[in-house]
Length: 303
Image (cartoon, rainbow, N blue to C red; front, side, top):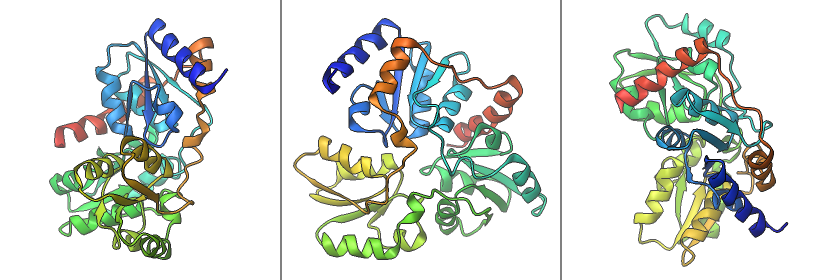
């Protein structure tokens, strides 16, 4: 079966079985082509909640499928690859977070969307990379325990100097792998290109960027820019997708190191097999679902 033939069969099966396919932006292009919606993790969760289908197939990693289940518990949710985890989301345990909170009486805990359901249940509010600074500013507490990404947390701290953010040494190992030297090398190689970076990168990298924002923010920036060349400082798939969307422009990955192997765990045959043969639905017990849902609801209420 060719890629095109498999894609056509997937499109037929998802219609026949009434399945909504979600694909994160970091998925391969052959997977995003057959998705109903492509976007950031929280964008996809909201799409899943409003989609008419009763079954959702997430082409991403486990915490994304969990977030879909939290927002749409009545739906059947599948993860395209059971091996697709997220090192950042799984770096901390609930017990570690509870112990850390004791160090800062009166603090509020802010969980990045890239966390497990168990960690979300320990948090007061959840945030995305694009909403983090806005929401932190609105919180009544001066002390904030921000989990798990220290790099995104440092970016938020710079935007919210009136708050005291505390961290627990978590990060995205992919984004954190690139350095100032990598950024300088890319800018020297492509002097006419604008450098767009994700806030999960180190501060030394962000300081060299022309724009800092989420994956969706980077995509929107390109859409509204008159520039013809861009260095893309996030997972390399984004540069590939932008190249398809804007073939008359040039997109250069910041570094070959920016490859998320967990996102690449999903293949087109994985999607095909689940649609054809079925899979194991994601389950969250009622107590966890209730506890973790609260921080997502507060995020929606705060913006």
